[in-house]
Amino acid sequence: MGRAVVILDFDVRPNRKPLSHTDRQALLSAPVFGKVFTDHMITLRWDAERGWHDGRLEEFQSIALPPSASVFHYGQEIFEGMKAYRQQGGSIALFRPERNAARFNASARRLAMPEIPVETFVRAIELLVRQDRQWVPHGAGTSLYLRPFMIATEPTLGFTLPSRSYLFCVIACPASAYFSTRTGPPALTVWLSQEYARAASGGTGAAKAGGNYAAAFLAQREAVDRGCDQVVWLDAVEHTWVEEMGGMNLCFVQQSAADEPASLMTPALTGTLLPGVTRDSLLQLSGRLGLGRSEGRINVQQWRKQCEAGQITEVFACGTAAVIAPVGRVRGASDEWTIGDGRPGPVTMRLRDELLGIQYGRIPDDLGWTRIVC
Ligand SMILES: *Cc1c(COP(=O)(O)O)cnc(C)c1O
Picture 1 (cartoon, helix red, strand yellow):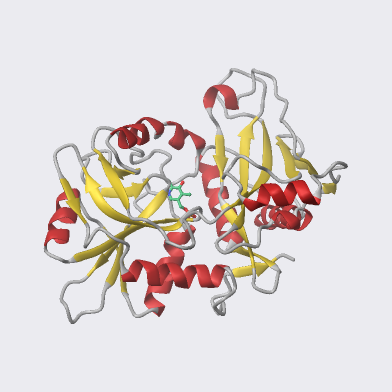
Picture 2 (cartoon, protein in one colour):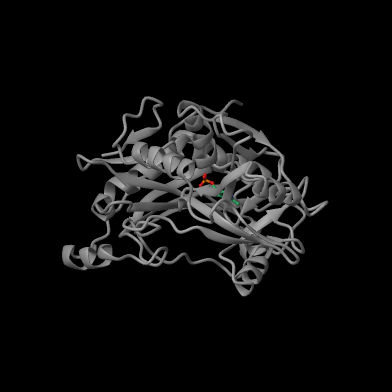
């Protein structure tokens, strides 16, 4: 029997005690990222008998689950990260939300979880943003960060088959500008993790799964202990091919000769990298800005040699949260070097301005990337 395609609707149950205007404004003036949440959340359930059902927009609240729920034991959890941006005229836009929906489903497939119709995913996000639109801050570089996620809820310790019930949820938190809008982003010092690996061939590296992050904390702590800001992940076999930085993709600005245009190179999606929406957007934008672009491969030695030869002039990491984070210095167990003059470079800043311009509606969006919600 075929199943009809239905766009699920959500039962809207507004919070009866939303935060007062004054209290909200106080929180919005300097939100600490990830600690303050809006008045509402989205929930949607799935089980093998009913499929997706019981969609709600409701008061932000705790989730009650039996201690036997599968997620607590086997870590079946995936998530997304996206933002709603206040536009110049006051309206609010999402940036390429279908890409996040598609990636969420790719993650779901890898973790043997149910997929959610793209329209339902986007509708859930839009519903929450519309309901909590007063939580979308107005300041330069600020946004409302959206965190859709899904967990396995079947109360069983059995693990021969994946959970037979799931909870999809969306929560939202106001975000200040990631970097000071006055001084711009500082250049980071990064730590080459040669002992630990984030992802191996056949594993879950391309999925946005909580477990990948659980496995990353130790290396991130090591990076901080070594006086670095972030960890750079290398491949799991030879421990030399560059993959990603923390929760962001890496980009290299290469200049083969002084009279050649600069070119953007980012490690190819081999299956162990997370396919970032920011990464993809910057690849497309670089072509429009007259830069060369490629998806390739670079190892630690080449990275160092090309910096010394002036062939790599800039390096930056990119992702939704920080947009673009310039990298100024690289440190490994037995090696250390500076990229360019160690400060954010012009190509990095040009790309950053362009992308932020589109996201905040300052630059016409002829690529159709922004979606006005309200
Ligand atoms: C989310 C994430 C990124 C960046 O993806 P965007 O879609 O650009 O935000 C990169 N690497 C990892 C490991 C991530 O989890």
